[in-house]
Image (cartoon, rainbow over all chains, first blue to last red; front, side, top):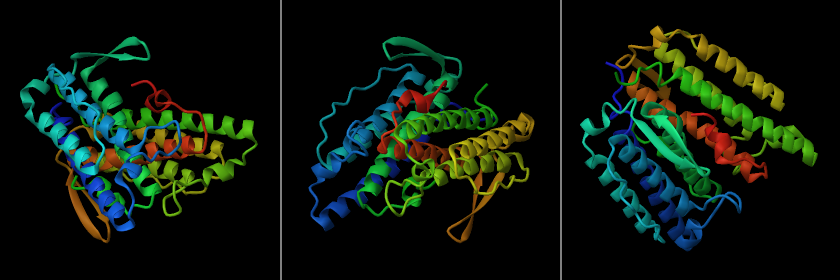
Length: 168
Length: 168
């Protein structure tokens, strides 16, 4: 039976994005309790030359919607990076999930060997669908979800691994 | 054709563990150049109540070897948490990769519906193999690899996303 390309992509990204939204709920509650401007929290970084929280969330969204669209061979919806509040970041996540779950399974299934070409560091790199999903999209997606978590934890938001994992 | 349970597990974990070892090489070079005691870098944390670098690497190893062993239905090898230097952490990674790649593909293939039971927060939780791999082992594994990266970056080691992604 194996794992279908659909099983390994859209519902998994959507599940994790829901967890990311729940992290932002806790971050918002923390900011309210501690009288922290949400825009300040959204601008926090682990170090000056890494992306801030807001951008980590945007890139987690873009990585997952890009993966689903590329595997399905449909156009990647363009979402402008204008979010300034937790509510707006959660809307960004919600519309990403809506897109991801709108793509029919049968468009993604069968994409194992489909060629996916990305522009990376100024040159075109071509992957097979499996290689792209497992070796590029997954590690990138989890990188940005985890770094969002790490930024919040490093700034005092009380989160635990259970918030990050959610319901597997 | 789909993705086999083996394709989605052992070689993927091994690939990412190799990238993690390469991050440690850069960390070691940074410590040598800046006269930083490697034990100090190994003890760095993003915040006092998160694991330090050394433990992030150990848990990344344990998550991946545990996943491969549980899916294959073989005993999880016990590795003591005694590492103090970058060389020792890289040995830990190397023996984890050796174990992971020693498990035959045919033991892991077919584990989609195999029941995997973990003790979590004081109670037994049972997953199917797919759910365990995609919804629990993956996010945990990438969490610890990414947090190791984040700790190093936050402490001035010059790493880029390319080091983390390696060769997909």
